Image (tube, rainbow, N blue to C red):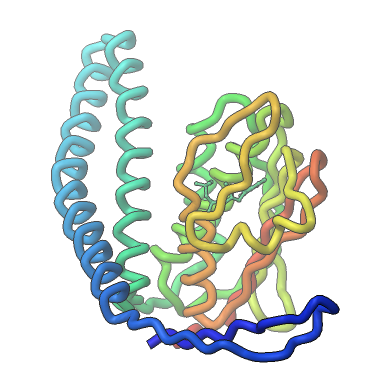
Length: 260
Ligand code: ADP
């Protein structure tokens, strides 16, 4: 049951009486569950063929390169980038259904944080010709946590920094020791976010509408998933931003993470 209290006011605006309403939300919850189930099954079913298309396209690209057919290798390269986008969109939908069903699981391992950051940069840098990702990685310790999930968060922050910087061409990624924890920030000099919208960007499906000149594609899920991952690993994620000047997204993580 959802219980709501509504005030009845007199002409002076003073409350003279309270009305109570009770709404049965069992049906709403059931509908929500059905929606989550559908999204979960649909994204899971889509994931399988996308994974094999991706594997075939990668082999094709290698074959074209080996035979010196650069024109076709280039075309398949473009195809690969779109497949990767599709894969990450479907992956985000799948993650959201896992989060709402309480089924987002973590696998723990001890790994070199620096190396992980380097790997993500290596993967993301080729997706842009305009931007240069500069790095200053001063956090040198190993972390115990979910390497793949942390990689997903860093990828999300970097791809957002690129996407929301249509004119600037520099992105800076830096890591440092933060009271014994690992801290990572991605700074861009793009469109920025106004102060009243700043904290909403971590909400599910929230998107700031584009600027007058630009529209940006997306589902509004990346930061929601990222904040869920960081919070569950016992860390914090935040943003500082000036509209029109750029944003800095940061997270901190304990060296040894335990899922909450
Ligand atoms: P998406 O990018 O798919 O919309 P996200 O959850 O990653 O979803 O981001 C939510 C919103 O936060 C974006 O729609 C955008 O308005 C804003 N945002 C995220 N990163 C940046 C950034 N680096 N600069 C400016 N705005 C950003």
